[in-house]
Image 1 (cartoon, helix red, strand yellow):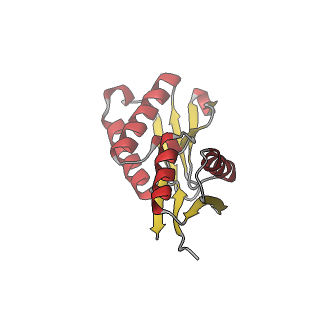
Image 2 (cartoon, one colour; image 1 turned 90 degrees about the vertical axis):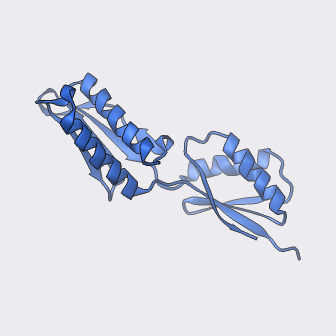
Length: 167
């Protein structure tokens, strides 16, 4: 029987880098003129994987989002893995926005990845969903590399990572 090679498709965010980016954003907000003498808060809930942004009005909230996004990009955190909830009114005229950090691949996105691989017509390639990742196996290493190239072209709404390559 031929030896099978495999790799895992995952998606994730380094929470320590998010923490560092949030600290940098807080420092920049405290020093910026347009945020002087106004309320602008950034909270990071590491356990929930969530950022909560609070500002006095929509203009400042959008500026706060820009500051946070720029710091995340500089720290190498993929913005594709952020999902923004709808802005809602907080107390005393404040505006709040919750940003969820997507860790892992949901079952729904996993099914899309598996379907994309099958629809591309790769021979002898098998893909299966395992928890929050997709394992792709094949006897041909070249075919696995073609699958990686194919998946990089596709847009699944997440930044995909390819790892645990075994032959």
